[in-house]
Length: 463
Image (cartoon, rainbow, N blue to C red; front, side, top):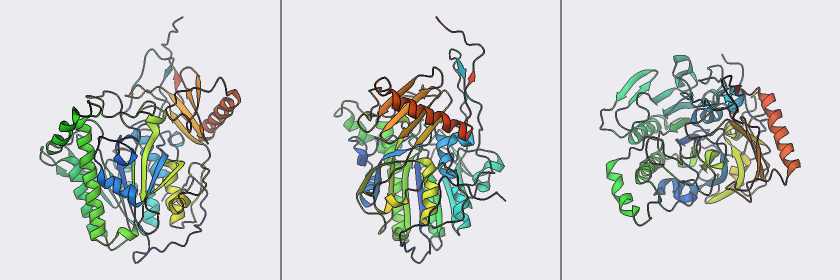
C-alpha cells in the first residue's frame, strides 16, 4: 500500500458546479504523441501537414500556446505527467536507455534512476481510487521490470509496445508482461494502437474510464504507411522541400487514429462526458538522427534534447463538450507537472497530500481568458542528449527565462514573450533579473535534491 497520494500543488475544491452526467464522473482520454513539435499541427500554423481531426479538437475546445513538457526527453516528461513531480525530484532525468557521455567535457552526466519506482503514486492510481477503470495503450517507457510495469502502476488494462519499439512494423505488444500480438510486417503500429484504444472504449463505455493512449508516432524511425505518401510527394516540389514527406505521412496516420477515437466516443454517446487531452512528450526532432531531419521548429530555438523552447514547448489541446468553451485559446503557460493537480481539482479530490511541484489550471479550462499566474517553472537536464543537448537547467517566471550551462556556468536570459526564438541574451543588460532567476533555480535544485553532473577526472582543459 503506497503512502498517500503525492500531488504537485495544494488542492482546492472547485468553485465551479460541474455536472458529471449519468456516468457520475467524466471519462478522461489522454492522447500523447511522441516527439511531436510545437509547430507541427495545422492548428498551430503548419502549412504542410494534414491534421484535420486534431485541428477539430482545437476548434471544439481550448488550445494552449505556451504549454511545456517537464523535460526535453521522453521518460522524465512522462513521469512528471504520471506523478505530478518534477523529474529532478524523482531523479528520473533522462530517457530510459540514455547513457551518452562526452570525453571532452569537464563533467560526466549525473547518476539517475532508470525507472519510475513503484512506490510513486501515479495518475492512474489516483483515478482508480476514484472508481475509474484505467487503461494504457502504446508507449510506457518508465521501466520494464514487473514491479515498474503499468500493471503495477495503477493500470487495469495494458497493451504496451515491447520489442522493436522504433519500428512501425515487426513489433510486439505485451499485456501484463506477456506477448499478446506480434507483427510480421502487416499491421501498421499506429493503426494497431488505435484498434486497441477503440476496443477499450467499447468495452468500458458503461463506467468511468481513463485511457492513456501513448502513440509512438512520429518518433524516428520515419516509417510511414505507403498509401499516405503520394499526396506529400506531390507537394514536395511545390513547397521547395521545406518539410519531410515521411514525417508528414506519419502525422496523418496518427491524426486518423485520433479521429477514430473521437468517432467511437460519439457513437457511444460519450462525448459530453469525456475530457480529451492531446499533447506531446517533448519538442520535435530538428536535426538528422537515423535519417533526415523530421521537422523544423522555427521560430523556436533548438529541438528535442535541449532546454530551449524548441525542446520543451509542446502543443496542448483540451476538449470537453459543454464544459470547455469551443475555439478558445490561452497564452498562459503551464507545465507537465500540472495535470495531476488539475484533474484532482476537477474531480474534487480533497484528501491528497501535497508537494510544491504542480499547480491546477482547471480554472483556465472553464474560463480561458481569466488571469492565471503560474509562477516559476523549472527544467533540469544533467545529461548529454542524442540530439546535441548539453547538461543544463532552466527557469521561467513570468515573461523571463534563464538558461544555465552545467558545464561552464554560463547563463543566458531571455524575454520569451517578446523573443520566442531566444535570439537576444539579456543577461548583460538585465543583471538583477539574471541573478534573481539564477538564485531561484539554484535554490530549487537544493529543495528537490536534484542529481547533478559529476566532475570528469579525465578532463584536460585546453588553454
